[in-house]
Length: 507
Image (cartoon, rainbow, N blue to C red; front, side, top):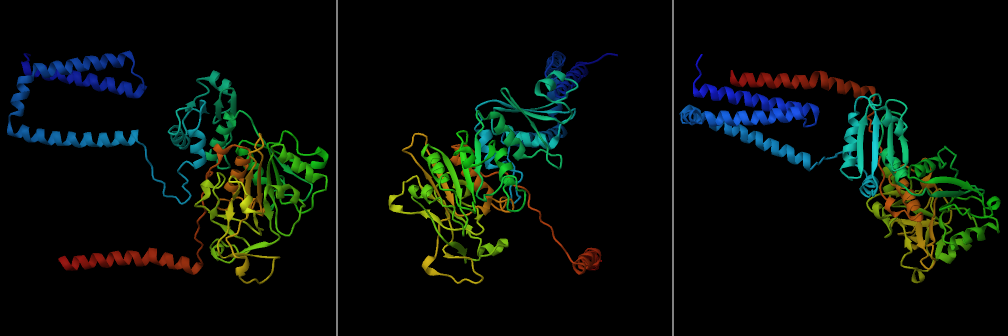
C-alpha cells in the first residue's frame, strides 16, 4: 500500500494528537508531571507540528472550498464559546465569590474567624486522618485557606502514613488535629458528627496563644454560678470563655485574702448579698494594682461596692429601667426588658452598632459627673428615648417624662495613669448573660467582647459564628386538609383547564 503525502501527514498528526491527549490524562490522574507524561507531551507536540508542516498544502486546498469555509466558521465559533467559558471558569476559580442568602449568614465565615485567621503570624496545620476526604470539611477549609497563607489543610490516610498519625497523636479514623509549632489540639465533632466553624476557630486560637489568661468569678455573695446549668446559671459563659481560649476559676475573697495574682480578669456577676467590710478594699486594691474588673449589679440589690466604682466616676442608680417603646414585643419580651440598639464609641461595642442586646430587669449605670470624665470612659449601652425609670417593679406603670431616656445601662473606664492599665466595666444587669439569655441576638457577643477588652485582647473582639434559626410551620388539621386539597385537586385542575382552553383555541 502506497501512501501519498497527505495521508502520511494525517497519520503523523493523529498519532501526535493521541500522544498529547495521553500525556495530559496521565498528568491529570497523577496530579504530577512525571517523566513518562513529559515524553508523551513532547513527542505528541513534535509529531502534531510535523504532520501540519508536511500536509500544509493539502490543508490550504481543504480550507479554500466553500463547504470547508462554512465548517471552519462554525468550528471557530464553537472554539470561541469554549474559550469564553474557560476564561469565565478560570476567573471564577482565581476570584472565588459566594453569595450567602441565609439570615444568619451561616455559610459565610464570621467576623471572629476572619480576624483570628487573617491575623495569623505563625503556621497552622489542620490534618484529618481518614481514607477518604470529607467534602463538607474540605469546602469549609477552602474558605479558611483563602484568609491566610499561614493555614494549611490536608487529608492523610493513617494506614499509608502511620508515622504522620503518630506524630500528630491520631489514634483512630476521623481524627482531626490542629497544630502550630509544639502545640497540638484534637478537634471534637458536635452531636451531629460535624465539625463547626466555631470549633475550628477556637482550636486555632488555643494552639496559637502564647499565654492562656484566667478569668476569675467572685463567689460568696449569691453571684451567678459557673456550675449552674439552669436557666439563671452561667455554664454557657463558662463554656464560651473556654472556647475563646480563656481558663475560668471561682474565687472567694475571704479565703483567698483578696483577688489572686494569677487572675487576669475578675468578674462580680450579680451579687445578691453585701460584701463584707474587709472585702471591699480587697477589690479596690486589685484595681489600684492594675487589675481588670467586670461588675454586674442587678436592681433591688446593694452589694456595698460604692467605694470601688465611685472613685472611677461611675454612678449606679437605685431604680429599674422600663422600655415603653414596644419594640421588645416583637421578640416576645415586655417593657421590663430594655432593648439596646445604641452603643457608645468603644472597641467593646464597635461590632454591635447594628445589633440588639436585651437586659432583663436592669438599672441605670452612668457617669457620675460627665464634666470630670476621662475621654477613655464610655457609656456603653443606651436605651431608647421611650424608656424611663421607676423606683421598684410595679404591676402597672405609666411613662414618666421626668426620667425619660435615652438611659445608660453600662460604663467602661480605664486608668491610663497606672502603668499596668487598670480597666473597669460596670453593667446594671447580670441576667443578660444567663444561660437563657446568652444566645439572644448579641448578648453573648457583648459579654465576650467585654472579657476580651478587659483582658487586653482587643484583636479577639468580634461577632461570633451564629447557629441556624429553626423555622417551622405548625398547621392545624383543617389547614393541612386545605393544603392537601390545593395540591391534589386545585393545582392539577387549573393545569387541565388551561390545557383544554389552549386546545380549544387552536383546534
